[in-house]
Image 1 (spheres, rainbow, N blue to C red):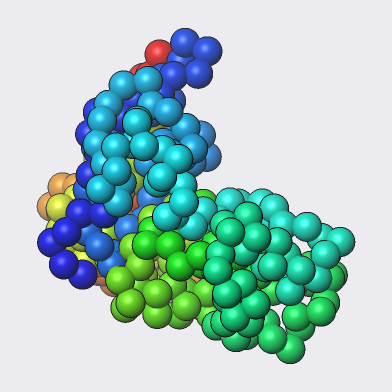
Image 2: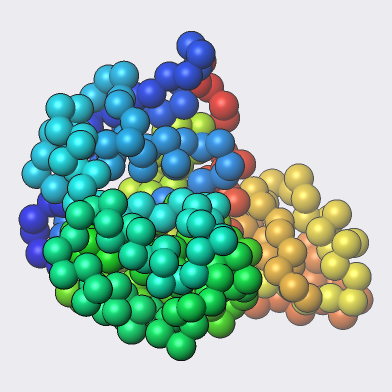
Length: 308
């Protein structure tokens, strides 16, 4: 990464039917960064991405994407951006090769055959090039969609919930490829609900109800939020959770597999709360660092739908 901003926008606001869905949003993303959007459904992530890449005109705000004005030069922005939507949007009755050739034609790419072969090779699709897209599994459809996004060699890649519905191995392979692109200067803006994906981002913005709650390098977020946490194991976690819930100092209790995590901003008050469960049968407690998932749940619980 370097100091050059690929995205630099401020005051972005969008209304639908009189309702504000994105409110005074600002964003600066340096070249080569992988920047993550985290937020619940309906939080404005997709709308923001579409405004940034020229697919949707903001009602208010200004800024640039790839050095181009997001309001006045949206057509030029779209030519230099790769956008992967949540839903597979290529032709299922065409082969992988035919789909990539079709996309290459849309971009009027020179040396089209070479570009298609390169895209097939980069994403490991050469052995399936003649297979119909509709017969592919979720993970292979994802690879095809990414190949189509990158065939015109965009400088900016926008990914909207790109790994929904694919298996963990396919998700890991996908992120390995995104990292490879970043190493060659491709900037990525990605919305996700998966915490194991969020930690792969260089920077994260938490969004709720159209507003940005926090925007910081991923490694710095736990320290900024200041959420403390304990891990609790016990034969009867339901009873433990019932005793902790609502106790002063406990702002969040959440199940993580066979454990219960108890979190709060006031460390002393949280410690005092955890002390009341130590005498329960089989209870074991361990202090831990709050992770992104606990922080995400905490931030969402603190936010309200105040947009009108």
